[in-house]
Image 1 (cartoon, one colour):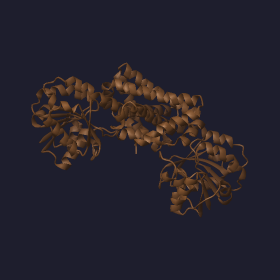
Image 2 (cartoon, one colour):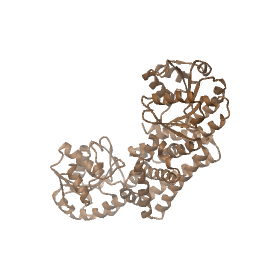
Image 3 (cartoon, each protein chain N blue to C red):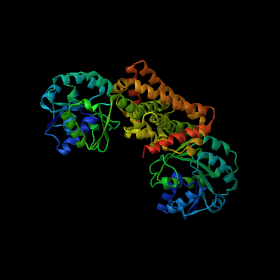
Image 4 (cartoon, rainbow over the protein chains, first blue to last red):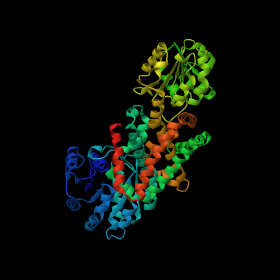
Length: 279
Length: 279
């Protein structure tokens, strides 16, 4: 079986590493617009060869889309127009709009919406790492609308990546990811900017930055080309969670302002319940 | 030389581990109100014996304060009243109010304000770990007001802990820590609460939480008994940074609301400059 990876960055490249390691397929074809990244992907051995998207659709049984979600929106209808028995797996971070767009496509059954809950703050082919997916969660979204044979192939890939799996509808998926992924990125971007702004008047401000700061701010290294489309496609949920988060911050601001430290203590203690979730 | 550690938790206990390992002192005396923690500290071998604060002031050359900053405020004047040639090292996270309180004390010279920029989200004697301080920064605050012999002893301890050192005035220290430590905790508490609130109506919300979420929320496990006094003592700086941070979040909220994704992209890209700071 030949497999094409469209977009050879952190996700696509890490899939390539795993497939090569396990000899899972005959050939891994890379589809990549950026010429520098094409060369890097070949040099790093993430894929066996580079083809155009048109060639890859013809030569591969499975096409995995790991480009930013706006590019997935652009490419997907045209790809579906051309498939016969191929399997198209979309690994983007938002699902409602994409699923809505192709819901009536005659080849809808060949498409599977999957979201690997794995990543780092880095992007591009050099960001690809071994075991990125191991023991992480692959979320299948509206999997019941995918043909059974196509789903089996996609699920085989999930097994190859050593991932667990879960099923959700599109609305659920997009709301959940807004709360446990998208907002984390937004707070990190905001925190980085808060301190970078202060640095302008206070040169040494980062000197005391330790592991706590690093931990809350590391996601601010994430790519705007990847994250802007995610925010755009998940606008309503992102606005909801942002509003709630700002409310929490405004609440503690008000309590500190009025010197109600009993309320501050209570607020922190309540947040400690996260221990139940995060080991 | 006998050394007393007042408050045997994450910081105090980790100092104990390092001193024992390096045979730095004759005896490590633990001062600890909580009886369960006394027992744990002895069982874990963090200290050699438990004494009362009064006994420890008499029997030890160095008294290291690693209790919450409100307790340091309560204890410090009484300790300074009793010292002759002992050295009192305060390792709390805020400095302006404490330094202001004891600035005219006749034994001011025996006191050194130091802040080890090291920690984890855990507290109590079991949280103590080897190498917590290694290669981290010890910040001396208003060190020029400490007697030279006392400073030399404190600096020897910093060396023993394998730390680097830096000097600051109190105002600078408290403002810098608000920006690179205290705000990180506040955003983490707020983020944990945002999602915990959502969980009430959406049982499965944490199912997709991955490493990004964990990273931004882990500080929300931090102790309210430690953090409420820090916020209280650093109120003005904390309010300033909170206000700035809320402004950043409100800014991106507004841009998403008005669907100005060019501005969102620009905002994220600007935050990426944090790469310069965080490796």
